[in-house]
Image (cartoon, rainbow, N blue to C red; front, side):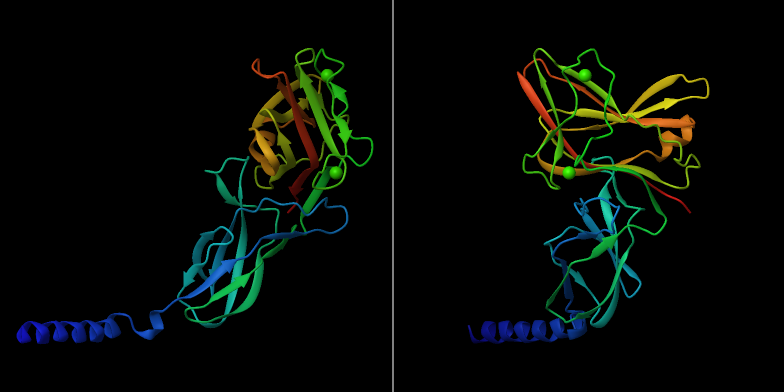
Amino acid sequence: MNKLYYFLLLIASLSVYSCDVINPEEDIPAYIEFEDFELMVNGGQGSTFEKITEGWIYVNGDLIGAFSDNKPFPVLHEGTAEIIVDPGIHTNGISVRTQIYPLYNRFTAQVELVKGQITKITPKFSYIDEAVFIFIEDFSDTHIFSVDRDNYPETFIDSTNIGGIDGTAGVIKLDANNPVIEVASSFSFSELPNDNINTSFLEITYKTDIPFNIGLISTDSYGLKQAYYSHGLNTKQEWNKAYLDLTELLASVDAPTYQVSFRTSLPSDLEEAFIYLDDIKLVHSNY
Ligand SMILES: [Ca+2]
Ligand SMILES: [Ca+2]
């Protein structure tokens, strides 16, 4: 018994000793936690509502990884550190397609990191200086989505004051008598890049009872129109924001002008459905 006791004591003291060797004090990590991500806007850039899902963080030049908010993560740095955070989004509303949003600036800051402690930060992003806004539709006045392309005059985008994210919102109502909508912008836009280098995004804030499609209607030099419904968004009961990447579509179609359009139809198992839209921004870079 005594022998066993001393043997265990020896093991215990050895393991304490070896812990000190294997895990020297320097290896206790400091933690960083994103409390939130915020968008700052200037006049003419629409609302501050964003859907930044991850921050891609560098600490003193080392890429640590991509982290969502309210989840502390360890970093093996301490003291004053330079951090850079790039804004991660789910491109086209699809969670498996994460990328850094090219139209927002990266966030830089100096932070104090302390071993065993969580440093909380709220990265604040803004649009890059090279961002060009083709239009912003906030539904505060007569809106641009007035071209009715379906055979149902009763389906259109109306305005509503339902608790939106930014005042008045647009609303589409479908029911059994009026089950289809296809609307396009009354303006055609010609200044969109087709070089596949500058990026073009349609940002859209929405909540919807049913999936709907979003796309572009091109008009070629002979005046012929062609619809490309390149994107779809699924049912969302809470306000959500999607960043729809139009860059490749614009490069492949390469038409002189485009309208932005929406379409959907009522599924047969529903009696009615509502789609709410707001803060729609067509924005591209211009390097
Ligand atoms: Ca609004
Ligand atoms: Ca209609």
